[in-house]
Length: 128
Image (cartoon, rainbow, N blue to C red; front, top):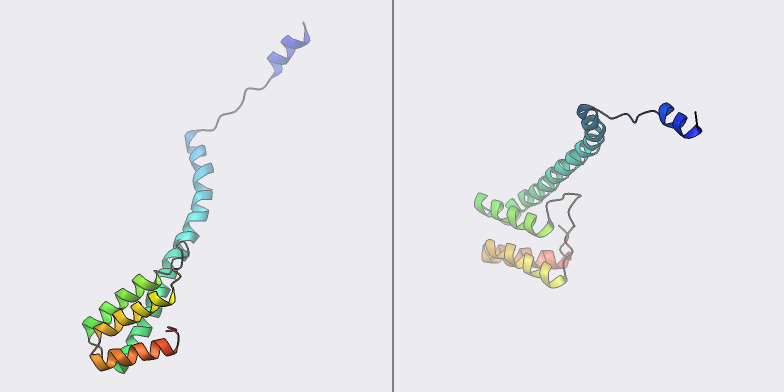
């Protein structure tokens, strides 16, 4: 018998994985990455909303805000500052955009409270 024919007889056939095994081989690593990513995503969004709510609730008594004004301002803040998701880009704003943002919020308030709000925000360079 020649060497070529011996090699063919002794060669092991490649093993194939069952569909269930393939699913486990692919699915488990995906789950190990996806679950922490989802937890991080949703906890970051919750923290951002809580931070915005705390800030706006603090403004409630200072600027005499109603419930409707508070809810409108919260929406404006989330739209401007972002959701807080680590998988999204944090918005970078120019001074003019920040000024317009403060004017938009101040416009929802009573005229003297709005003017005072804009003055405080511009003095603190929009840090809130």
